[in-house]
Amino acid sequence: MTTITETIWPAVVSTVGFEEDNSLLAMHFSEIEEEAENVLELLTVLRNNAYHSDRDQARDTAADLTIALEHLSHHLGELLPRLQEQLDIQP
Image 1 (tube, rainbow, N blue to C red):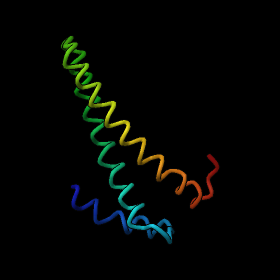
Image 2 (cartoon, helix red, strand yellow):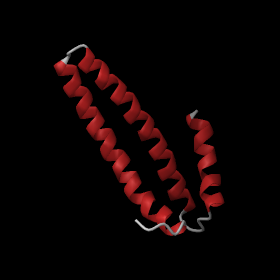
Image 3 (cartoon, rainbow, N blue to C red):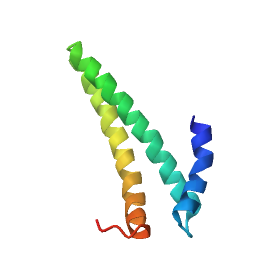
Image 4 (cartoon, one colour):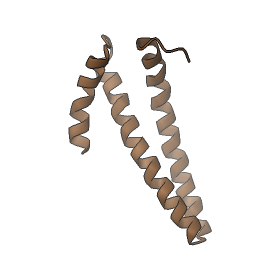
């Protein structure tokens, strides 16, 4: 799936109407998709850790989740203002 989505993001950026930094914006879309999938997987693992009362695993998973959220936040911070501006959406 990653290969397919990586090739579509430049088309998405162009279709939305961006005229500058298309490669960079496509990369941010791709990274957001990847990190969002990672966050969802880690949340599932964390729920499972809690269900089994596995404190050590839960803490390890929570640490991984924190890193994934930081990465997601970075890419959102780069892309969101550009999307808001392009689509004339007030933050």
